[in-house]
Image (cartoon, rainbow, N blue to C red):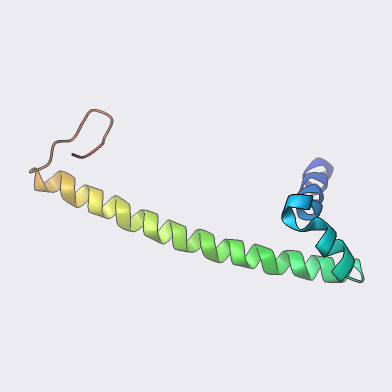
Length: 79
């Protein structure tokens, strides 16, 4: 678990992830945790939107397969 926590902190403070900005704007660890929680909520929302879109695409593919007017290759691609 410690390794995962270190990786998470490294990711949070990474320069490409506005790490220096996170350190300079937050006064204490509590503020950093709040900022991380806010970011996680945003990522969770984005994940749910992507999963919803993925489910719609899967259902559209199934409808195309059932229609039979399209050629389906062995790897599942529809033409």
